[in-house]
Length: 313
Image (tube, rainbow, N blue to C red; front, side, top):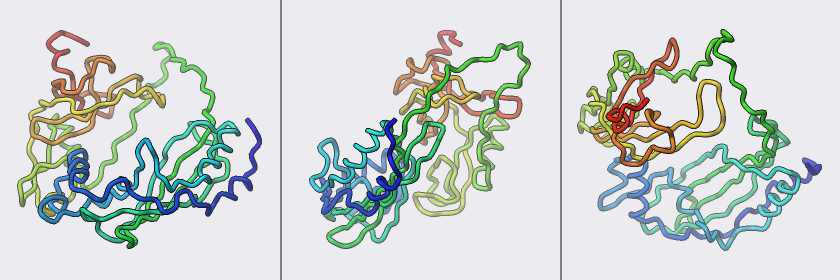
């Protein structure tokens, strides 16, 4: 790994990453509809005769696609080239922050400028050692400030990992526990239902819309009144990923994490079990079961129905 001084990296702070960038498309209703369908967001403000765009779409209007943007500055490429040359060849997005200044409506033309806001000192993480780079993008709609988007990545050299070694079953060491779910006043009723082997879905007391995950208020009409209905347990795999990394003692990768569409119409994330991860498919029927993952924790998971009929594990 080549030596790279922090002073060299810090000199990039304040340099432009993009100037006079122009959104590939104006704000438009088809993109708003696709976004809301993907997010399961039924807010009436985002449809109808005079819709607004969901605020969290702020970055979507600035994306350059595979061809990129004409206004991209050389500074960002120079910084990445230095980090690559120093051995920090891997990259992972870590987090983003957004500030909203005005509503965006169909027809608004999007322009933006971006600046390299900060480069961290060298940090050591579980992934490896590297530098966090934060870019700030100032977004305008029809020339007026619309919001700010900060995007942070880690450019790092992957840590060398030793092959995982399983302890023999006779070692007597206690099994690692799954991370505990965060239970608060907004979702406590859901976990109380799980303890009774019930999968409860919230139902709005105003418009009667079903919602999941649990929320303190209705995202369709804003009502704070609600009750629950019990899910039948039938569903289909809407989407999924197969997890291989990072390894964690309480999990046994590879395993499938699915976005399951319940028969009631809402979707939830959980493990898809009963078949190897590479056998999970979009559209597969699944059925709810409750799995005891350790002595203190039971979780709702979904078993592939075809496997149940075939006598799989």
